[in-house]
Image 1 (cartoon, rainbow, N blue to C red):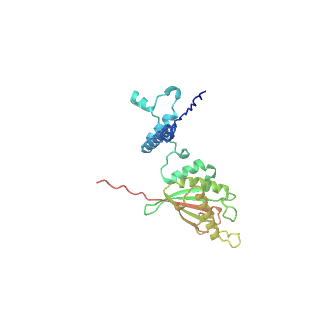
Image 2 (tube, one colour):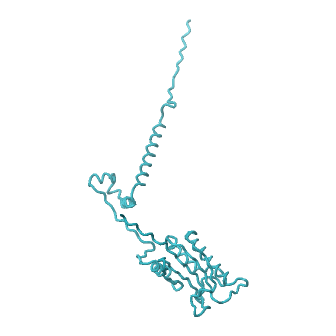
Length: 260
């Protein structure tokens, strides 16, 4: 009896190994997406601000039901123009343009510090060297203090005044002198005299300005003058002599050179 032959079948499985696979397609898609992204970023950086604003306005008004499938380029090729929108810039705090630095601060006081405007006196000065200075006096009244009695702690009203002024000063091309003043009544805080008290109050005002965004490099000086520079000279004990003075020194404008 003959033995039937034994048949062995070998199945060879083909593997793609490192020479193929779907990962290559995914990687190619990734590279294409990155290239598109960087191309878009480059185009954005070379655009003028007006063009950027126009494109932003276009997409804010875009209606998918009216323009689905129509890109800006297709719209341009079909009509020869792209619909643009007027960009309206609203001035900060809705203030109309005012001539003169001092007048602008007066307008700020009238609009944003209306309930505290009696505390603020503004004067525009000009030196012989044509240096422009805005002088802002923040004064106390009887029963309406700027500081806690006999201390350098600011009241909420004083903080509000300095906050509003700081928001304007921080963006101006100025340096600032912060001065503290007292009246002629001797200090009741023992060894702390009017010199120390006025200096401490000027320092508190300076720190409040910096807290609200005024860069330290804009602070030119911080000084206390005690009762030696009264606002109300006829009565050195008048509470209005207790005040903080801000002097804003505007940087001189460089004259334009004539083109030969």
